[in-house]
Length: 437
Image (cartoon, rainbow, N blue to C red; front, top):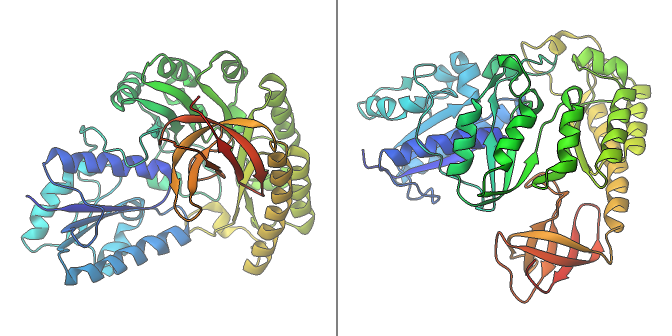
């Protein structure tokens, strides 16, 4: 085949890595890839199915993509979490799709397309395997993701991930080190998994810190950022690694999901309000200046106004650098779906607004302290709308936290600059740079 391929990748950064591997399979077959949908003949839609809203977005994207068949588009491939979990309902109804693949079916892409070009609609979910082809990186060159494990064994009562991606499975350490080496010069390597801190436990022993140390030995990796570190697995060894490893960015994404003990128990989460506060205090004591980010779910079944106020007060006590707040999504085939006390959607939205208002004030005060100070900022590119450069400080992960907007005589993407912070708002900082660090 000599078709022009395109990809729309939806969902999380873990899904992005899957998409990059699929692009690697396409490149191995010698086919060009274009970002211009007007040129594309085979479009791959890499879907997310974590929440109902994500499933609706994926289906809508496939249906809207079908409109391009009036041009060069010939085939639509639907891959990822949505067909992996819902192929029984999806295949008969989403007739816009020509080929359906699951999360580990990259090697079936071209055999399935051959059948599709012969006139068949193809359900190849679960029939293939992961590609051995090198990934095609879709992020800016300065930061890249490394997915260190697949699946999840935590079985939180609201979550579909175990039923979509299976039990937790750590990638072999030697393969991860080789993959990180193959990524070339990388300012920021971002470790991701559904739960990074459990790395290695499925084979008998936690190996997260040894993995970080091995990756830190690579000359092509300048910095390492950790996402999705579950609070009950943040060990003393990991905290000590922050104190001695200069490549480890003092930043932790810790998905807490709630603060109140009753809700945490119904969610199937380990830990308690006090244990979370103690962990935050211990991290700040041992790693001064560490940035802490989390996510919360509001409106979980049975959540009372008192528990909602408790979460607001937890935010005020914890004073986290950043956080995201999601309204509870009632997902089929999860224990929480059947729980009594489902919260009305308007109440969930109101509680979400109130939580964001609390965090906005915390974030505003946190950033205001940087006014008049100089921060090291990596340049991510140009913001055309603001007519300036845009980058990130150490406490800002790509795509999920705020940015630093700055002026400079010149700046190059991927280079680091000392930026004098002149103004801040709720989530972003503004300043000027004069020279390269």
